Image 1 (cartoon, rainbow, N blue to C red):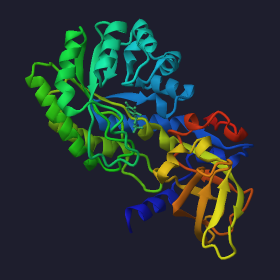
Image 2: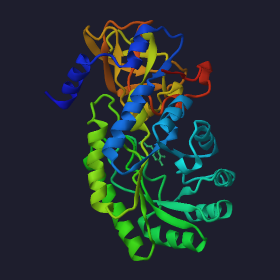
Image 3: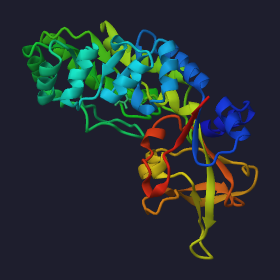
Image 4: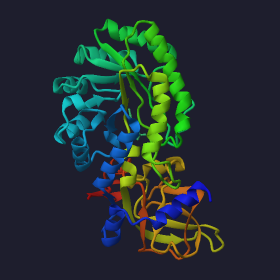
Length: 389
Ligand SMILES: *Cc1c(COP(=O)(O)O)cnc(C)c1O
């Protein structure tokens, strides 16, 4: 039995989780994301157990629902915010400024000033101009240098856009010091949905090399921020969060054991599995009589929350009430009048051959990167409805 089949067998025998039971018991007039707060809390505790001494800063962008932030505050989480709006969400949920880091390397000067006025002291940077902005608007702040890491094997890579080249690291740290800022450490991101803990090794090695050079050059780094990347189970069952995090931390401690502080910024790995979308089939059709593939059009698509199906990067698990029936390949598409609103075509999806308009479908592990990715009303389709239970 391969891991995938074993995972499905395990799922089949487990009782329905709360959010799936809620979906089964209710009807929805439009696509709805249902998130189970207890599942978020359980996942937080699992990550916390596996991450050991690393402090968890929840990457707010994954899902900024107030109820989620509040529950995480109650659990003692810290937060990684990307701008003024996310800072306000964290503060409104009861977080203190000391619990919030400003992790975006691309900041509006007014947002830097706002964060500084709120009492936030930790800012990320990866470029010279950004340091000048921080020095002007948050004088004396602690800054963490984000570095580019290569050879990421993530399903949703975050590499090139963020981070400085390794050869620029020391120069930027020197500049920061010259501007009266305190360089507290290094940060990186292995890429979102990094399926195996082993995939972290080359990335950690690159970061460790820069860490050593910086310390030798007299920068008293004390913090390493290992970012996010913790995976969720989509069409493949992943290792449990605690075991995964523990394996990552073993590799981190082997290289950064001397670091006084370790930060991790899970987003997807914390909230994705806690949510599912209740959706509906709007149409099943064939373009030609002898077409091998049916087209299955759902009432949710790329513009209503499923943006991570871009390039078919994230392959959600879709279940229906007919899963005991025979299945066949189909192209899965969203409802909008835009031809890019196709979810799975290169790799057709197996869905029941009896599937028809009006059938309920459940899209699993949608708690991260869905609700805020929904457009504000493209083609008149409303943003994704969210219910937190
Ligand atoms: C988006 C983001 C994260 C979260 O990444 P996941 O892979 O969802 O865990 C963490 N850190 C930073 C700086 C981010 O931008």
